[in-house]
Length: 152
Length: 287
Image 1 (tube, one colour):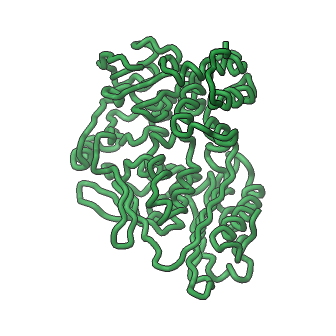
Image 2: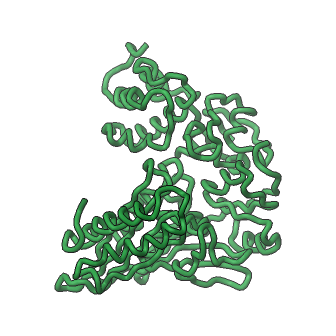
Image 3: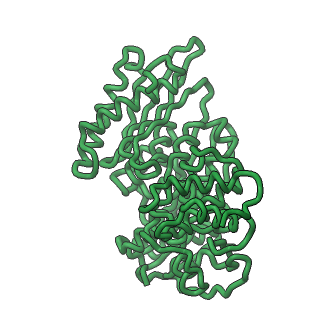
């Protein structure tokens, strides 16, 4: 398995979910286990480039996969984290990593989403604090042209 | 450890998978996209002794159309079907139904065959497949055979598949005459299991009159019901017929969400809209 660009050993217990494997064996505590039944979206990761709820994947199924979590460092993730911060899209922060990963995938597929596109895409991720307004605003802001050095 | 104990198998051919499922009998579960099975393991609703993961079987993946039949491999991801240009062109009803199944991150994993074999009574894909007169290809130790969609679903979350049998493909006959499609559902919130789902396929004659109108309606209580509204489309009674079928489905779901009166009213309204969509506004009414 490759996690955020780093090859990691993949000896796994078949009973581990990918979410638990990433959290407990690979230091990916950003992968939040919320409902652990595929509903809340907090454990969303990129699995071979496509978003997946890592609590619905067995670790054994991802033994040779490329996984990207919200801890990944690249310009788009950095920008998303910055605008989530500046737009107050984190409140308690529990759901934020799932939103970051799903937003990342949306922007990769569609660099200029409308507000409706964003709302539709993020409908599968649950946030109990923000009311979603600030999250949607942050994703819109992340897609604006220009640099984002002022984000902090 | 959250999941119960099981042995994990990852065959690379259909024959290996069928042999494993046959050998292990009812204690074995086939793992497709995992969007229903893995949560049910986490909840320990299911405790199969053996899990046969189908994700390594390349023969079960793919979309092709030939001889007037659209064939979709059971392990084709729902997101792939949703975005497939051939399907959008040849079978927009299926594309619409798949696009309303769960969320993107669910459809990235979820498969066509998994949605059929799981047999959630309210699910969009089986409902559309029923309206489309689809056949399900099933393989077991005795070989391969085709089962009409309506005969596969026997009860909620129950199919007529026998232990050791595997869904390998969905086959949809492509129409030779102009066919209009409509799809509507109510789900709270969007992306969750529908309360009511209506899929309409209406074949029109050259003069624009109706040749054949198939409408499938589903909800949470009983498998989808197919309603032939060919005769009642012109006199305006089709939405009532569909609502009547919905009442049967909804009464079976008593106690699981909205009551039969709500479901019947929703089915009538959705049926009008789906029929209007399928006939370019000639029958039914947009809402």
